[in-house]
Length: 328
Length: 299
Image (cartoon, rainbow over all chains, first blue to last red; front, side, top):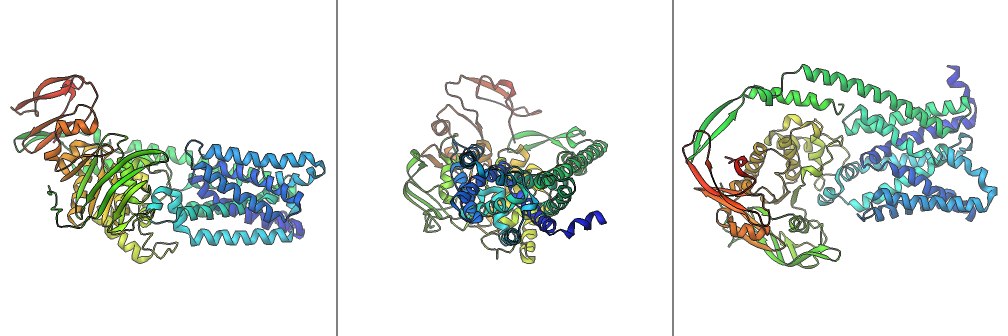
């Protein structure tokens, strides 16, 4: 018990822990949408893009959140605009915009070498750097993110499932996408201090993928992903404290471990369902059938005929066969 | 089979007037004028690249016309999505791994009418379940969409389109990717929906299914080559013009059989075979050489 309570006497740790929990949960929540949109790479790219904005803000003496936030938001809008051009594609658009933006940051740092050390935290995450002010901002972004996802649940779900059709059914897709970009950019920016630029993508993607392996239900996936994200944030922070490691790395390593465990559970479940399916009656295609002849307007036909009970069995068997691919 | 409606006295539900559509600088079709009337059940057929999907997108308001006017329910479509249309996309375009249930998918169709609450309300749930039961998939409401058969999956997306009580139902290739039995069941179901007053426009490549189930067909290849009752317009001449390739049509009483595997410059030969096992009847028609004995008649 002392292992858990001992670090809490340090203010920097309680700040870091709270930040880790909030960042872990937030990244995991938005991660569900990112993973289902098959845009896992955007978290990685965006964090690199924001790094450029952070460096520019520092040099220009702008407020970090304002400068990096605006930079990040514009980067996502630009990625979305370029990605719509089918000749380019989302992956290439992310690659071009974010690496160019990251390169701006690297170029400025290499020009003014005295900044190098202070950006280590931005790259790899550092719980020591979480101030009360940072915590407030992370808290506000967490609450606003959760509220927006809740309020616009239908828009986000439909747009993520099929944006083209959602538009036909009256969903303001462009507006929803812009709102999503804003939320994503905000999360990446406030997560930088805890996670570090290089680790944010994993905090977004891994809990969501882990949850996806455990359920076929969207609402449950959101719930599980957030729980996993919070768990990773908490465990990761303690590991960071006790082993004096970068917090971003410990959070991601915890997430990767949970993913590995989920994947094993998934494999075992798939195998057991597969074995059950093999014990089921043979599919209807292989069941004996009989043919009968009949006549339509002078056209004589032969129909193969099967019994309804056989079709019931086929359905059950099909479901079992499916479960070997997708867990429920 | 329902006969085409008398369209002379109706106000068109969809009206195209000298419409040109395309993407960027490429014009897909131009100077297109046609009307779709209330309670019509029409199939849009034509080769790939004929502009069928573009035409559907133009009605849906997704592809604005480059010239001319498009009206739906008397309202001009100007980049605004008409609200009284239900749309069923090709099932091949659906992400079946997406973790949504049948109920959640159908609830998406209520977006315009909903109060935008994050959860499905009691009234919405009742409405959804009533419709799912009508479509005979009520027992699958809480099932993930991938766990259904092809025909059931098609019904889910049909339910999503119908839940908003549309005047016009547009379906993009509803018979592709399903077996013949399911294809028959889907078109039969659409016929019933049409008899309940819903106007239907669908695209398909299955000419034989169109000939058997649809009372009205539009042969389209960047322009309307012909439209009318398939019994009248499914001729070798019209289909060959539509598909820009030789097409053969066999008629036996009310039954039309189209050889729907056109190939330009194909060699055709006379072919005789029994209509079915145990039948004494035979008939002769032209078939591409490589189809030969493997060609089968369908009911």
